[in-house]
Length: 264
Ligand SMILES: NC(=O)c1ccc[n+]([C@@H]2O[C@H](COP(=O)([O-])OP(=O)(O)OC[C@H]3O[C@@H](n4cnc5c(N)ncnc54)[C@H](OP(=O)(O)O)[C@@H]3O)[C@@H](O)[C@H]2O)c1
Image (cartoon, rainbow, N blue to C red; front, top):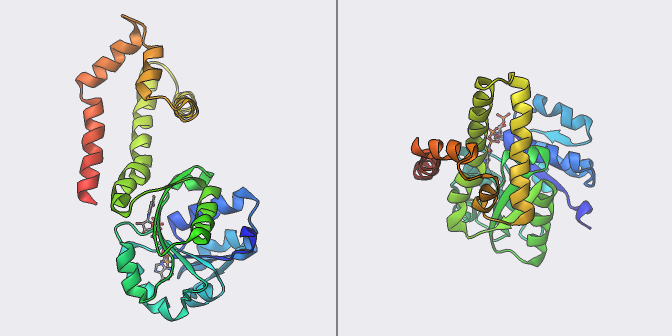
């Protein structure tokens, strides 16, 4: 049934294309049911070859779709939604906005209609079907919730949160990708200093981070539980960890997260 739902991705830039790649790579959803829009559509041509319909006509994309994913920037989303309002049908459409900091109330005011409105905060893990997407919604019902969850589950994992946590979700989940990348870069730099070439250090770090993450996901344990298992008394792991803490490792991360949150 979900395969008959037609999707429009309006403003298909970085995040829109990450979602698009995720949907294509999943191989279960028919690409001819997806329409992607942006003004400069040349960059979307590779997706056209996969069967996706590409156009600069947002209104046409909305009219022929059921689930409208709006991946525009926060500065122009409300103005474009206002323009699209005549084409939005409350009996047919489900609207999903990805715009950071734009509330469902602002969206509803822009479109002047009551339809199921969702805010989704995925991250660029969507590119490899490993997004964590936080969702919140108004005027939803069982059907719209299951449809939106179904599509975002194709590109990773989905959780539902209160709307007032959406900004915090952006920091922890979306900015979080950059925080983890910076931590990984530092590990690679350390690895090179102790003897590995960059390529080998990257392989070791990437797989180590993946393994650490998988341990926590599968065993559902607190990180400290897994840390205790690898810290031998008087050993090298605890010596390294404590040295990092003396230099403010945990504190730097927490302060970075709080600073991003204050900035948002
Ligand atoms: N990047 C992330 O990790 C991330 C995570 C969570 C949420 N978000 C949110 O996701 C949204 C998109 O972010 P992004 O990084 O993907 O931005 P982006 O790459 O700039 O994508 C926005 C796209 O909108 C298109 N656009 C602009 N005006 C348009 C119009 N009138 N009609 C159709 N398309 C139009 C632009 O392409 P043209 O110039 O060719 O039209 C552009 O490619 C933002 O609201 C952001 O807050 C991003």
